[in-house]
Length: 235
Image (cartoon, rainbow, N blue to C red; front, side, top):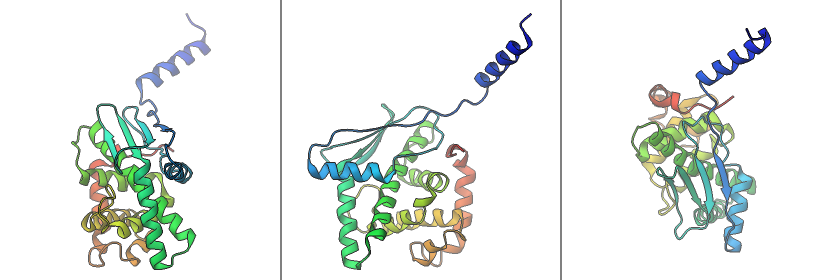
C-alpha cells in the first residue's frame, strides 16, 4: 500500500489530469522586417502589447507578425495561425497620425488611439480563432462579438481607446476589419454595454449612436450569455 503522502500526490495528479487543464497560451513571433518602415511598425506593435492575451484557448495558436505583400491581418484555421502584417500596422499608424494632425490631437491621445486600433486588429482575429475552434463558423460579425468580449475581459486599458480608434477609422477604406460605420457602432455599443458607468466616455464621445446607447447593456448581456463562456480570461 503506498505511503499516505504518495497516495495524496497521485490523487492530486489524477484529479488535475481529469479536470479542466489550463488553456495553452498563444506563441507570438515577430519576424525580421525588410525595411526601416517595417521595423518601425514591428517596434510599435511589440511595444504596444496588443498581441498579449490571457484568454483561454481550446487549442494552441501561433501569432506571427511579419512582412506581407498586402496590408492585412488574417486567421488561418488549418495552421491555427494569426498573421499581422507590418504594412497594416504602418497604415494604421500613418492614418492615425494624419487624423491627429487634422484634429491637432496631442501625442498621448494619438498613441492611445493607435494602440487601441492595434488591439482591435488582434482581438478581431482572436475572435475568428475562438469562433472557428468552438465550431461556430467564421463570420466577421461574430469575430467582432468575440473581440468585444475578450477586450473587455483581457485589455481594460484599450476598452475606451479601441472604439474611439475604430470610429475614427470607420470611413477609411483598406484598413482591414476597422472600416465600416455600422460595424464600428455595434462594436462600440458592446464595449459600452459591458460597463456603462465605467465606459461612459464611449457614449459621450458619440462613438455609439445616442438613441442606441440605452440598449447597449442588453446587447452586451445577450452576446455574453451566448458565447461568453468561450471568451474567458485567466485570472
